[in-house]
Length: 153
Ligand code: HEC
Image 1 (cartoon, rainbow, N blue to C red):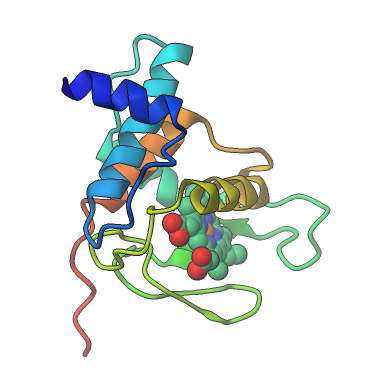
Image 2: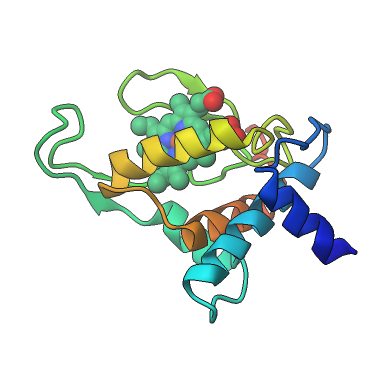
């Protein structure tokens, strides 16, 4: 029955997701990306927090094209900070970014369209192409483990 629900939800493109104020939607999204990743690579075992953390912090040297980041090495952590439970700060505009961890900020990973749009935008900005479904599954799985904002000094 549980499996059937996942299949149904995938067919509906998660249109039926309700905006619950908890991490259920983030967990469902991680599962959805896992299912897609498995169709590409049957050996994929499901979201890995460890791989997600590595990916989140991996610095990639930026090449020509974006004047504001050219030559710099940036990671997801550059804007979202090393602790995704903390507020981020945009490296170009300096604007504050709400925490990415869905545990701290329950609005995160609730809207598939928004999530897909941001993944495509930021992955392309940082990596030069969209992230794979496996990377997205790992990423959300990792974010779900980051529950504690850095204590204020
Ligand atoms: C240059 C700054 C910057 C970098 C680098 C960056 N992001 Fe973001 N990201 C943002 C901002 C700003 C938002 C907030 C938009 C919002 O509030 O919805 C955001 C939001 C997101 C969201 C939306 C989640 C949700 O449900 O609201 C995802 C997914 C995301 N980022 C993924 C990534 C990934 C993956 C990387 C690394 C490959 C990355 N970001 C790197 C600035 C950045």
